[in-house]
Length: 246
Ligand code: ADP
Image (cartoon, rainbow, N blue to C red; front, side, top):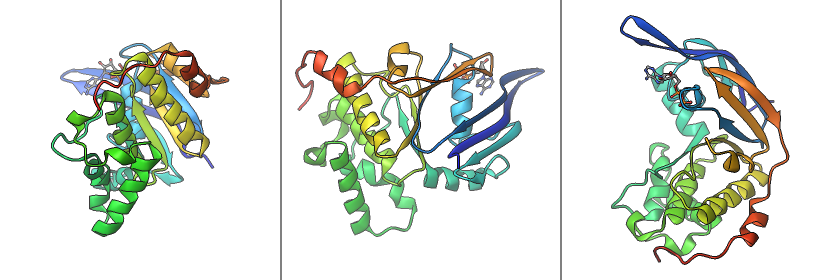
């Protein structure tokens, strides 16, 4: 069963007398364990599509099933609870709370779930360990490098065991080597079964995904499965850089 399935998904925005057709009839199906890159020029509908997939917004037309659940017609409150349970978000700017430790940042999504403090801590620790940051749990974001901050954000996205990770330009703020390190981490998680949908405007970044969806003028223009490059192999060819922040 598909983890994400859309049928003729559409989204219009009304700006005074004008209607912008941001998304026009997108039908796509993503299977569990896929690593999908969403591409296309600025204004092509990528963010609109991701906002709908992430249950941050409601479509004007069409249907959307997330992990088997029909979510296109849910109320905003219902969408919020589906979102919390099923989606892990990773953003370009990391979006961590500044005066809060790495561990507490990772715990945040669990605060709404009626889970005991002890279990929250255990789960957050396990996720930090999974992204290679067990030693940094008491560090605040300003005491971490960009790559480490993005690892914390990935741990936070994973803490609820989401059905899918939606990553919006997750390496957009990182240097080349750190970007490839983050992609190696995402590929490792993907091989363990995690479904990942990643927005990027960089062709290089898309080569690490196994499938490419290319949008243009609100339509899905290309949908191709490709052989991805192994980020761990690429890392071996890149020079080591000094840690920016310890
Ligand atoms: P991309 O992420 O590929 O740059 P977007 O999904 O942001 O594209 O935008 C698709 C189209 O919808 C663009 O023409 C954009 O101007 C328009 N659009 C996006 N968000 C809004 C909004 N909130 N209100 C009005 N128009 C919007």
